[in-house]
Image (cartoon, helix red, strand yellow):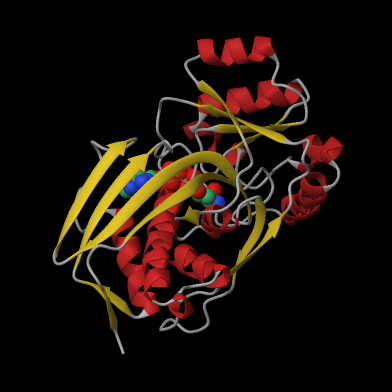
Length: 310
Ligand SMILES: Nc1ncnc2c1ncn2[C@@H]1O[C@H](COP(=O)(O)OP(=O)(O)OP(=O)(O)O)[C@@H](O)[C@H]1O
Ligand SMILES: N[C@@H](CCO)C(=O)O
């Protein structure tokens, strides 16, 4: 039986950005980064009001097609709960289309806000982390980003083959506790890049040798991230997607190579164009100046916990 949320309930979800792939873990590894969007939702008697502040405010629709609104509705539907009306305020900090998982954060934030409202009505109806990973990955399509924003830390995520087209694909993820000495630095270009465009550059088939190369590095990445940060440079090597996307990401490719030459474990963040550097030492001042002079922002970011609501 559908239950109705009374007007006047409010929640705020604080959802981290994420970086997918981490080099060799294409469509699998991810990490939550301490750059947060905030989504406040209040139930009303009727109607929908949407306000967006900050990143993307001029680009995203302020109505029912807004990603966050669709995710809130999906979250309420999954819990079997209905709202007469909603007042939604998005305070966005995560840059859009830069490889920092903004669309997954929007999906996770909307679902978490809905879940927070559901919990106020009846905690027994609220979704657990496993269901949040499933729904957000289904909704957005990239479990490596979505699971990182749900669970925090670093994640190993996976999707199962879809055996029945009438049933949703199944997704799963586990959180890894990142070694406390590892810090993340994001080099964020001004230019945007579309995930669907750079995915289109990937070949249908890959050589067996390259697949084996990446399997070893992805497995090693789990070790390096959790207990052996000294192995990060070798553990972040990739042969499956970064070079294949290089023609669309010339600035990114140049900085990944320059940082790696200096011994810093740099990778393309998600589908780019951001560069993610994982390091146990402070980011060198000369490199920081050179990157900034090239027009990229340099962000020192914490490895974040997952989405929170209050
Ligand atoms: N907070 C948001 N609110 C509404 N729409 C959003 C929000 N964040 C992202 N989007 C939508 O998602 C698009 C970006 O998705 P895309 O997958 O290309 O990049 P990304 O998620 O930022 O990066 P990546 O998936 O490579 O890490 C934006 O252009 C916008 O349409
Ligand atoms: N694994 C996905 C992440 C997109 O954010 C890709 O690289 O296309």
